[in-house]
Amino acid sequence: MDLFSKLSSLKEKSLRVGGISFEDALQLYEIGKIKPYLLMVQAREITEHFKGNKISLCSIVNAKSGLCPENCKFCAQSVHNRTNVDVYPLISRGEMVKKAEEARESGSHFFGIVTSGTEIDTEEEWREIETAVAEIGKRGIKPCCSLGLLNEEKAVRLKNAGLYRYHHNLETARSFFSNICTTHDYEEDIKTIMCAKKAGLSTCCGGIIGLGETMEQRLELAFTIKGLDVDSVPINILNPIEGTPLASMQPLHPIEILITISLFRFILPDKDIKLCGGKERNLRQLLPFGILAGCNSLMTGNYLTTTGRDTALDMEMIRDMGMEPYCL
Image 1: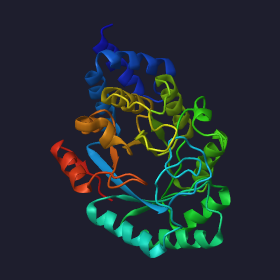
Image 2: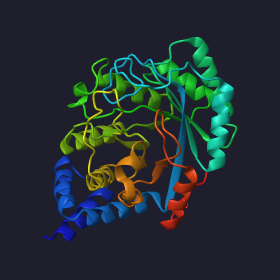
Image 3: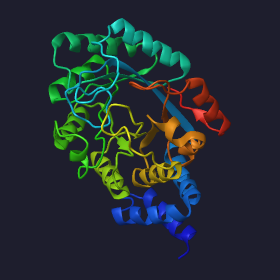
Image 4: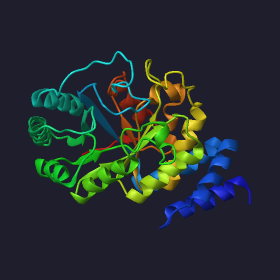
């Protein structure tokens, strides 16, 4: 069977209930190394089958910065790393709502309140966040949160406040996690997603590529996420930060990033796949190919501690590719 026929066969398998296997994904990777653009086109057809021609945009605010006790090797906000990141306590609900309004006006469909730290553990902060979530929900944009580890009680509180989606990344494969973080267990991250789902929240869970993991470990992450049945899967690409243990990590080649995105689309055919942090630095002139390769969502604007891209440019890119922004 030639490569095109093999790809077509695996695409049809991806479209069916059950989808492709880990072994299928490894075959796709080998094909992608030979014919990366052919792989991307097939991935785009899967995207269009489930998601049509729409691209959604999300924005975030770093609502509480620095002093995180976790020792994630990539993170500028960890107390274990020596960076020049801004450090400040939780911003006010008014500031959160203002940032959400600005995001909506620029074209974002989702807005995330993100805080540093293992979890939110003071009642004062919880009330401030819950009030902000309720207000943001009235502003015509879907409120999301990324507040660290979560239990069932707190997940229900967020749901009752009007939260639409909870975000919590696994960061990398279970088999590689101890190389990146040792201050909490992988299963705690899994439990957080399960608690959010049980509370009736939409869930967002992905990771970072380029941490030193193998392609097999990226596939392991994708299949773990598939088992969790989340709604949105953010793909970040490492942007090495001075003062972190991964500061000297060599960047992935743009084609390898695009192949990875396509493999995620084959594994997670009906999910929102969101291209997030590090996309501009790592994909460079091939940034639009992230959509061709399988993404149907973009994080736009600035990230937590690094500068992102103007939403107007993302809107222009979407329209220039003959696609349309998602409408709430």
